[in-house]
Length: 241
Image (tube, rainbow, N blue to C red; front, side, top):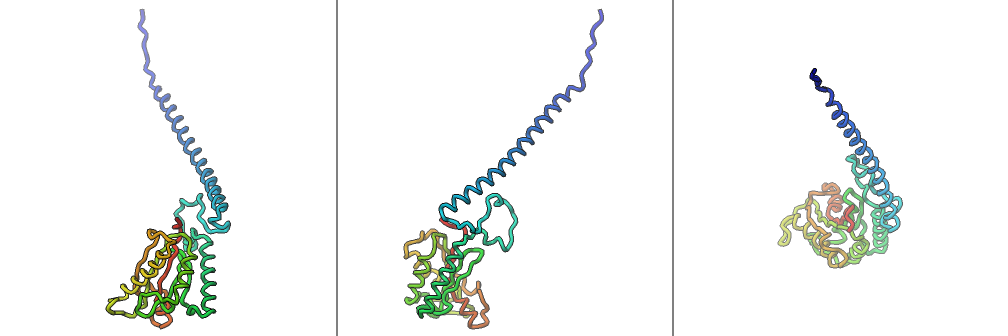
């Protein structure tokens, strides 16, 4: 009786390989489907957030806000620096400018004492020392307190930074050894006034002095030095609480 001869099948690995390829294909199909679903969800979330904010009146329909669907991008430009600043900041700027103009026309405020501008940090309200401080002093002029109070009352509930600035003329008095001390004391005086109003959480308020090292104009002229002697109230962008 002849014995059967068994031949080894050397192609059995193809079955495992085919199973592996099938599983790998299925895995990538799932990944692709998931990524497409995420994009749709992002678009839906963006529309829902926009609609909710519009109903609550937080942003105007034409506000410059960053789209949720594009928030993960790394691209930026100078024109996009203010993208998260809502139009209400521009409206507040116009409102303060109008109030200042009226006060100046009524003789209750010196021309140029208050200026405003919008920067990447937020809305900057500059209080120049000609209208708010005596030369070399950190005491707020009593005649300007009503203006300061009006400005503070107009500020929305956001984080605020107060910055003191001087010109480059050295100072050395019994109270202030340098412009560092003077600028810091003036910023602290305005910050204390804001806190005393009781509308702001002190944890959302900061104050600092920069002496003559952050000028907005040249220190080579009296006009430029006048612009540099200021306290800036900065309504910080994107920090509403």
